[in-house]
Length: 447
Image (tube, rainbow, N blue to C red; front, side, top):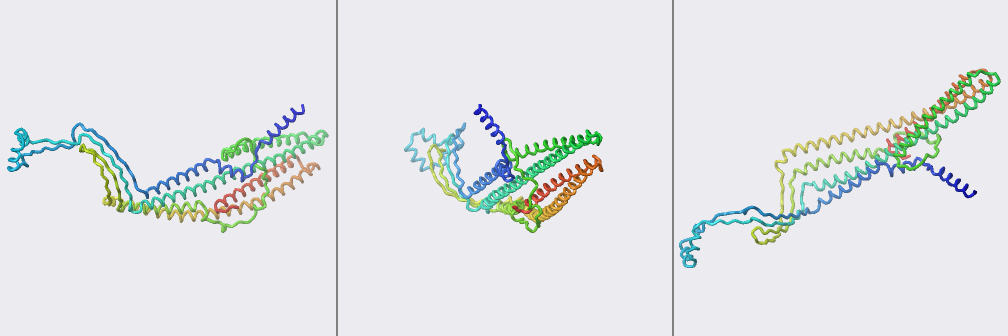
């Protein structure tokens, strides 16, 4: 019996221990490994690496092989000859002594020659580009730039994922803290209810006071239901976002953080380390390379090559090798190419202007984020002061109610004001956390 009881207790302990608790950093780490945006970003980097490797192969010779066999319904080459036109009198006299009469007569009539009714052709060629106007070099630079841009995009995705996780996290903290407030309110209402019930039984007060307390308790129960539903929904979102499994919860963070009220300044910002800033620079650099690439497309290209070929078109196997050089000079392409170059030059200027404009916007974003932190710090201080004031007011109202100098409505109103002040303090704390989060991401800070 004792053994069975031990097994049951062990199973129960295992069940209760199964709920994993996570810190904020653990949730971020899980999201960075499992979130779909991060997986996509890593695959984009792999694709960019393959594109860079593909561009590098353009430095090597282009080797191609060709083979063909055919059979036509008639010979592709046909020609007529009249031998008599080429026989001089002296040659005719000599042929008359050497050839029979039938052969001499055939030479006086036109003859038809036909060839290449079927055959086989095969060959292999290697073509090495010598000068392409810089297209190969520029193509490799663009490919490397694309790989760097994909890495920066992954960093940007990491920032966005971490920011979203932290926002979900503080939503959960907010709801849990408001749940604690409801617990405290329920406990206080329970004590008031006990005092009122005692007073009603003693005939000191009327049942209306008890009814007011019960109605207030119903409101608290309704608020708890909404909080629980909201908390469950945010946990579901965070579970999907971080790729979590099974039951879990966050480690109790509370509303204590001594660093929250430390002053910050926008001068601490480092825009040059921001992925957004570096992506703007890459965009301007890519526009410049694309303009050069457009110029290169309209320059002459030079290549050398070698090949080995075979054919039997004359019913005779022929094998031969060859070396060659090619020069391609675009002439009519310049008619449209000139406009294409101008278009790329305009795009380059637009990318440069966009860089300057967005850098200014990034600076404004940092300043606004810093201002929001300062404002949120002030709101938190005011909210903390409001909690102290309503707590003192609640104490006074409870004492005066017990002394019979105030009504139940006054006491419940004081309790409501205190609850609202605590919720406002919770909201101010979370707002400051989110403001500091926004400042950290806007300025490149890592605190």
